[in-house]
Length: 337
Image 1 (tube, rainbow, N blue to C red):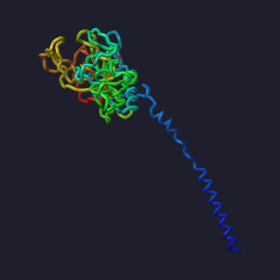
Image 2: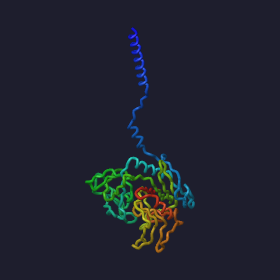
Image 3: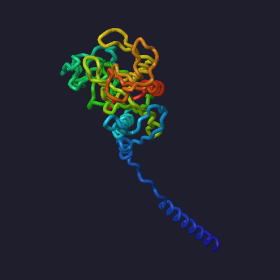
Image 4: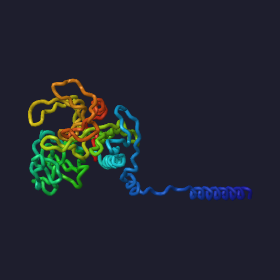
């Protein structure tokens, strides 16, 4: 009888423990299933100007301008809202794409671009597309449906997204950061950029306010490294040209960029610490006219009115700052107005 009672008690204890364990297991909260579609959408949400944070930590502090400053009877400014828009655009294209190229045809070095379907002669008596981009030093852009005759020209130095590379084709399919749609470009005009490059350096040239700002990304912020006066290109045929608007990549650097006297083959002097971003357009120091050879630090014309031949003139020490700190093939130059 005692054995039977003990057995019954043990059975009851076992059943109580089992029920308690089951209840606890049922009470354990379970995490909600992850909505992968929602997460993916959140990851690729486009940034806007309001998402861009800018602060100032100058690495070059000579001739520094304020956010707004007087010029003659007007006020000039650094267009931070527009700068933020461009930086958001740069951030967005990098977040959704990682294969890059640069359109290149400096001095038609990769071959003169063929005539396109619709073209005109501009005030300089040169062939240009209907958007004002000249044939000289530019790259032909073809529709994916017609690789025989081009639709328009792309500027030397423009950053492009590589969409498709076919080893059996003479063309690369691209998207530009400026024009809508996909385009075919002959391979000889495209320089492929290393996959490891991340564009964390940016320079803003403002044609309207004749100033220049340099920025560097650090963490989630863009840090202003300098704010200076500059002088851009003047539209004055047949030799002087305005600095073209757009988004470009610094392609090469020259400690001295020698230039010719207009209309001749005679050397007129040199521009120091030159950083080429499109065609013959450089960010450089104060020009030194022959026969002088000594550098000139500053010119009273900086920050006034356009007067160069497409280039962007700076104080020579600021040009050297750009030359030393903003790397080739990894620095974006935005020309705005």
